[in-house]
Length: 291
Image 1 (cartoon, rainbow, N blue to C red):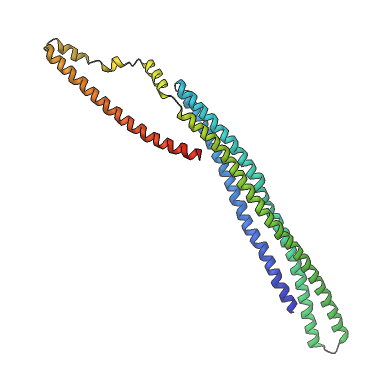
Image 2: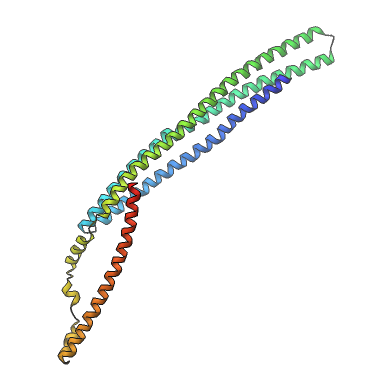
């Protein structure tokens, strides 16, 4: 009986090993499948962004149109990398985790086989004890019962040994698989992000080189805006000049021009301050990329 109890404790450890694998590998499989689906959804949303960028670029002037189309092409390239990421996650991470459902089921069958053998052994032992109490002098019946107990014990020992070998191999394979699965996961993620960072860095630099002044000049030429038109006085001011002394008109014009120059200087100073702040941000970002 002590041997049976010792064997039960041994199998209990093996059974817990299988139960833990079933629980946690099932959780990993569910989470990684969800992770892969969400990555695919992110790819789809980025594809929509690419389309919107191209549509918007087609409404703009040449410089911005070219810049945005180049950016859209780069984003599309990143989504190609993301598609490869999704396919690799499905093949190298999710699929191996799914396999553990069948593996665990097989190990449970092995444990069940052992439990059946153990129950037969216990049943034969109990039968032997009852015969010894009920018919202690019937040696033939007791001898037959002892033979049945021996066979049941041999079968239980053989089944236990087989279970030990099976669970040992299971544990060995589990450790190897968990290492490979998550190593593949990290490799896939690093590969995607390395390629994406390379593309994004180039895209960022191209966006920084965008010459907005060319597009602005093109825009102004289309709507016929010129410096002379912006500085011209209103028509009613010209009419007043015919009834106002020349000196007063001149002073009024000078005052207006002085106010315009002051406003212009103030606006230029504000723009310069904003440009300096942006340059500081861009320099910090470039420095981070270079590192």
